[in-house]
Each structure stands twice: as structure tokens, then as C-alpha cells.
Image (tube, rainbow over all chains, first blue to last red; front, side):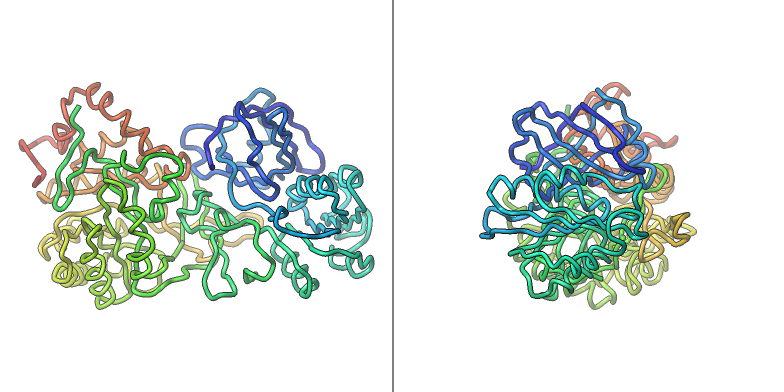
Length: 255
Length: 311
């Protein structure tokens, strides 16, 4: 059940250019947080920042009630979040949105395709998949070498291919270029990243079963305000914060 | 302390209700608290057919405020009546339905359908949405059109009609007088102000719709001023809204002349804001020397009357 929680910052570090990792501790169990879900964070107090920031969950430590988030400082809110200190409190709604539906899927191998700040939710997913005995291959795309993060963490779980737009690290090009070169075997794919990348991924992997996770500017984060919607192929729409952010690849129409 | 207030069609246990568009059809917030705590609930705007609304991004944070350009997305009036209203009706909290449209005929049809829905206590006539190309705010910025749509919707509605006014006008009192003359049972004010925010890096407006409605604490002084002006001119019930985030804000609206209040943007910042304000209200009223909610209404006016509400 979604709740408001005051989380305390246990660790805050810079892990790549403009990219920050924060470990948050809860006073209550976080066992219900599943891969693909996000937390909706209030920035500061008072009325300076009225809209919460949706940040995906990169890892969960159930035993110690810890959540890891990884985000980029792209505006005022995320910059302020990146300047918090260990011990500071963070007001968050959690867990928000849907998770990758791994419990209901039968597969032997999975392909994870992440782009930039879409990489973090795939990490907790990879851990859960590996724990179920599923082979994981990850193709991760970044702007350039300075932005690359979590390569080693993913390597500990399976094969990893890194792509950078400028070729300054790993393969040069987009994640779909790497896919064409590597042609990994897999039963189901999971992808998170910019909409342009997801469009390219879903069209490249059109014949495969897959799930994508969408990003959008959000209002309430709980499905009430209709700020973050995406058209669906059934002629209707889906609310990304509530009915997503994870969708079957063929359910939503990306523009 | 007695927080109750009676308005046409509405017997409220307290004056605080979530504003239309900021609370969906209510059930999302039922996961956070018991909706029976609320004075009333104003549900999201209904149009005749399902509307998809505008392209995304639809929201942007501004200095002490936010812009939205949702564009009246909703599943259509019949779906709302069949699917959205029944779960909400399980709570002992009056439901106010927001009525929108592109033409007077659409307003009439939606009002007739919602007004005849047993669980709907009152209508809020939305002639002030700034985010749709047709209808919406054009009815709210022209006194003759405002009069016409109010009169025709009143004729179709079997429940009281509160007309939601746009602040995007030169003289709010003229519009308020026009809808009052057309038979409005009350006013709801204010809707958002039109605004724009440009991203410095992309050099483009952040909202896909370019223009959006500005809300949040940044517009509160405008709302207070407009309610004050209308209260000076008219003795008509007013549901006040515009940037309310705390019980002190509620008192300010009451002093300006509002009989009840709606909370919008603040629900996004804090999903518990409405019950928190309701809990804080008795102490806040007492602190400023009031013995009841009713006691405070209109007391910001120099030449106060004993009872400015029609209740």
C-alpha cells in the first residue's frame, strides 16, 4: 500500500557526471517495494517546491530497510536533492507505480536495455532475476564515458555491453546498434530510458515479449491529476504514475 | 468547535474540500486517509465524450507555484457516472461534479446527466478552464456568454449550480454579477491564471501546450482580492480557492468572504493536506478570536453584516 514515509539519508555519493546515489533508510519494512517502482520525493520544506520528483528505485536491502536511488541533477529540485547531507530526512511517497511483472513470467534468460538515468531500475530487476536463476544480459547506453555508472555492479550479475553516443567508452552508438552487433539470446526483454530510445528498442524487438518503463513529468504521482499520461494502442490512455511506469511493450503508443 | 457550514445543496461538516482536477475521482486519496473527513469532494471535470487532453509535458513547477495544461482529460460523463461516482458515493461526503464543455449544448447535456445522478449534491460549472481550445474560458471571460451558459445549465440541473470563475478577466465583479443574475446558486473562485515557463536550455516552453494554468500559493493574493471584491458586491455563497496550503490560508479566505474553501495544488505536495488543515482549523480560528467557522466568514470587510452567507 502506498504511504508517506520520512526516510533518512545513510549515504550520498557522486557516481558519474551529474549522477548521484543516495541510500535511504526507512523505519518500517520496505519488503513491498518491487523492481520498476519509484518513490515520489518532496524537495525541501514549505512552498518552494510544490511538485514532488519521481525517482526510480535502483536497489532494495530488505534486511536493513534500505532503498537506493540514483538520479541526475537536471534542474533545481534534483540539484537540491543532490546537496542533502547524510542524516537529512527525505519526505517520500512509496512505493509508487507498477513493477516489472517477473513473478508471472516464465523465462530462462532476460535482456535488460537501459539508457542513462533509465539504467537504475534495471539493477534491482537484474538482482531479482538472477536470484530466480534467470540469465541476465544488459546493454546499457550513456552519453559518454563521464556518464557511465554501475558497469561493475551489472557485470557481477551477467554479461554487460556498454554503449556511448560518442564512442568514448565501450561501443559507439545507441543500445539498439549494440543489440544488432551482439544479437544476444533471450526470452523476454526489459527496458527503461528516454522515449526515443524506447521507441527504437520496441521497434527493433517487435517480435519479442518485452516490458518498458516510461518517464514523464508528474504531478500527484498517485493517479489523480492526469499530468503523466501516454496513449494506449486500445484507443485510450494510461496514467504513467499509477498504471505504469512499467507497461507491456505493445500496450502504449510512444511518440 | 463547530466547523459546519450550510450552502445550497451542501451540508458540510467542515468547509474544506479538494479542488476539481487535483483529486481525480477521489479513490486514489482513499489509500491515504478516510475521505469522510472531508467537507466535500469536487471531482474532475466531465465532458460529454471521453477526452484525451493535451500532449505531455502537462505540468511544470514555477516559483511557489505550478503550471498545468491537462486539457480536461476525462473518461466522459457516462463513464464517470457509472464507474467513478459509485465508489466515492460510499463515503458520507457530498460530491460536487465539475461540468465542462465546448458548446452550451454540451454543458447542458453534461449538467443534466450529472444533476440527475443521485449521489451528486451540486454542480460546479467550469467556464474557466484555460487549457482547451474551444469552450472553457471563453464562456468565463465574456459576461454575456457567462450569463447565457449559466442560465441554460441552471434550467437543466436538478441540483444547485456553483459557477467557477476565471481570474483571467479585467473585472471579476462584472462576471460574478452576470452569473448571479443568471441564477447561479453560488460561485467557486478562482480557477488558474494563464502562464508560461520557458526552459533555458531547450529555449522552448516546458509545457507541450505552451500555455498553462498557474496555481499554488503564488496566486493566493489574487484569489483573496477577487473574492473580497465579489463579496463587497454580492451576497452569494462562495467556495474560495487559490493557493491554500494551511489553516491560516483558510481563515484568510473566510475573512475575504468565502463560505467554504477548496484545496488544489497542495494535494500534490502533501497528500494528507486536506485532513491536516481540517485538524488545524479549530485552533487557528480560536487563535484569531473566532468561536465558530461561521463566525469568521466575511469578517475581513470593514462594513460587515451579521451574516454574509445565504445559509
